[in-house]
Image (tube, rainbow, N blue to C red; front, top):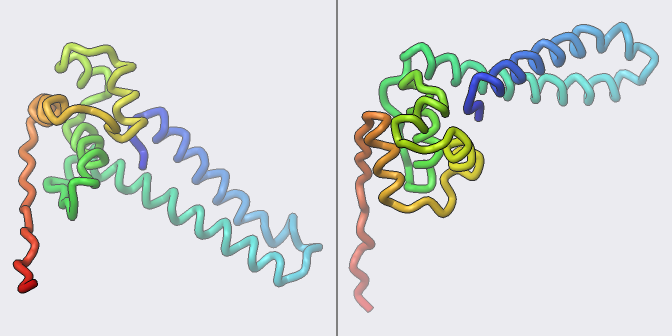
Length: 145
């Protein structure tokens, strides 16, 4: 997942490099057996697809095309907070300013996917982002014994 502009630029560069590698595969690697070239092509295409998906997601968040982030569990909340920050058009530094923290603290939170962060801090981040979190709790069914 791309979390900031630096990662976005690096990922875009990686996309171009993989596209170049794919384009050169048939000419530069022509001396290799066709089976090996096919394996190499599939590996490059797989990585390229993943990088393109990450770029597309980041661009969709930044452009405001994403209005709702669906969560299937609380485990997905940390990445949703990062996505919400991007969708709000805030840098890590701007979020830090809103929370009266240093930018490095937000960088740490996001790098560790908010591991060990208190529920109060999570609530503060959500409020600073202006988001509402609604999670349905499904109770276990009563068992007969």
